[in-house]
Image (cartoon, rainbow, N blue to C red; front, top):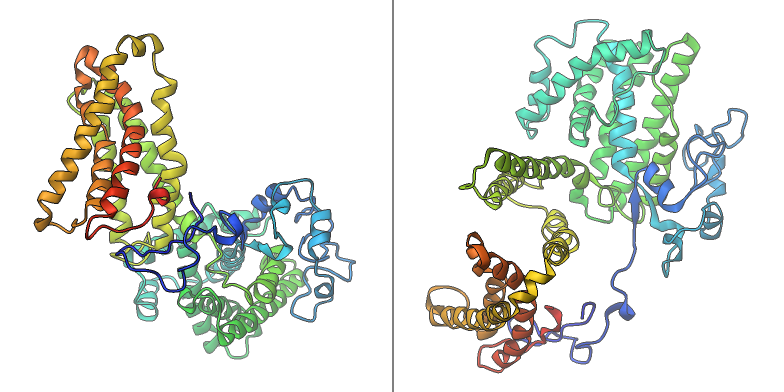
Length: 511
């Protein structure tokens, strides 16, 4: 069973305060508690079947903000005293604005669970929009481009890797032509879409533009436009610093105050630049409803949980690398068959590609801090995806593709290998581990039995697959051995727990 209290620790010591809770259900039997339902706007609209989006007259499902210019609740109004702040939506009203869906039927669900994603709202929308307008303006002169970019970045932000710096800079230059085309030919607001930039590049771009715009504003103290443009990026960087991961899952009061103040000033400066651009007939400094959603993030969601902890930065940054690795595994397997490279097993190629991905995650700051893996990443990749996606395919694939007539024709040999062979393997491996206990850290019989069960369920007999009829026996044996191993472990482990040094805890938690 899952979701039950342990009363004994991993080293056989009683856990304080658990004397009367051992084996009882945690949280009344619930397997999990929904605290935050995060996602970008498109995902949440689909998940809750919402009829409200940025295209509808009412453009926010958290309040009654409108996108109609003649409305008193226009979304461009901002700050804690904006009129639409008096129309915040409660749980009942939110459910009424949805079509039937499973999420709102979860026990204890309420509207505060729904969370805007900081990555998509700020790093992938607001910053790229502002940066695009700034790049169009700055590129009209050559004063900030030649010979100063790398120097400024390395001086002000030495912790950023040179690879990220150069990647971001090259992208900035390559997008200038595209930005001008949007503005002059297609008559659109210039913007850097999500497919062009990721979260880390957006952060580097905002910091670099902060340095450039502040330097220009200092040179032109009478230029109000330059002052407002610098204020946009100074406060964009301040917003990012206020929600830094180092502040923990709940923001301290000073960080929350910094976030809300910087958001207000960012919004003020951007609104002023947008009004100026409209008055001059220029398509620059776009104002979009996600500015309004940033207000909800800063004023409503950040006081409960840090937006950085409830955002999907790891998911966005890692999905590309994992997807490419899986694609390479599939392609390499097909190439091996086409080239008839029978000496090269597909599993070996998969292991090599997986090792390369794992080394990249560990040795770089891609998967967390350098030389360390983020615990959330470890859980998502090595626990959640393994249990929910990989293991079911491994377990059930051969069962679906099994040839029943051949299976029953060899049933006697299959049962001998699966039951007797696996039993012998478990006992031999466990005894060998105990016999060599002076040379490793496995000291108690129960742990030895667990390792033996794991090793024996990986089908070493499947190496016979290259031999005619033996392939059938080996292929069918692997469908039986995991069940045999689980049964053996349930019987062996309780007995091992009674041996001195064994850990006296139930095996129900393991299977």
